[in-house]
Length: 68
Image 1 (cartoon, rainbow, N blue to C red):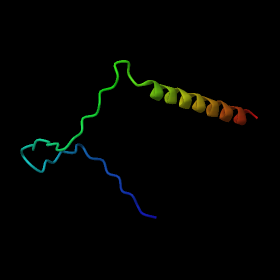
Image 2 (image 1 turned 180 degrees about the vertical axis):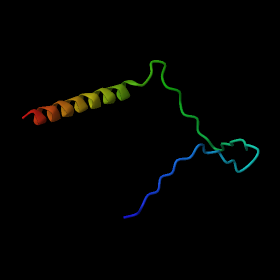
Image 3 (image 1 turned 90 degrees about the vertical axis):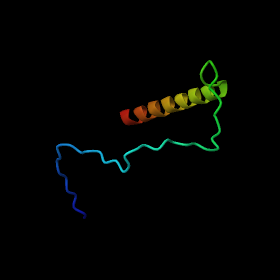
Image 4 (image 1 turned 135 degrees about the vertical axis):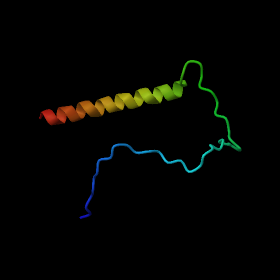
């Protein structure tokens, strides 16, 4: 088994490779459409609600199984 060594240090100083920051350039980026004013759309909300119901059913089934 490999041995792991752990040492305490007072502070780790950040090391920068360059003195100046180069600006980030994005090419050929596609802008995503903004979310609807009311938040997420109906289909997404229905899916989230369905998954929440499924998770609740699984959690209650697991709780019932541990009680027996």
